[in-house]
Image (cartoon, rainbow, N blue to C red; front, side):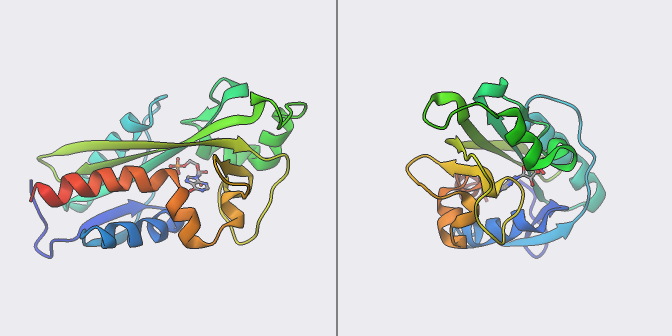
Length: 194
Ligand code: IMP
């Protein structure tokens, strides 16, 4: 494994929210991490791990330092897994309102609104490339709930909770989120393979 001279791994993303939630997790697990804002080109694939791996490869080529990148997707059962790996595009186009419209008629009391939020974290340092994945299961709420949120937070209710991610405080959201499991798996590997 190649380390940078300052032993910091760069979290590369155009989305600062991801880094803000990743920082306390990684710090707590002994990983030194910094934010590098960049819009990375995505390969087209249905698999988050493939997208994340290629983005990390590009990010490392661009920066010449050890990097991690994250790719996420919301997979809704009643929609055959849509928007999945296309969640970012769908957010920019039809948005939450469009997703709720597609689910119109799907009752919250049945399994129709079941979904999973998944995260893939990819590490690349030019000699080593690894991916780590995790998911959280939940349901899509019937209307957006919560303030000061981002992305799909206002409509995703993780199992075992009655609040959407957007209704939770930062610590509760981090504790329940898909990115935490993937980051933990990465950190466990990273700190033990120095
Ligand atoms: P991306 O392709 O990895 O950027 O993520 C796919 C979509 O999911 C984007 O619209 C993100 O804003 C959204 N997203 C990823 N993680 C979260 C989260 O924790 N809460 C809300 N939305 C998220």
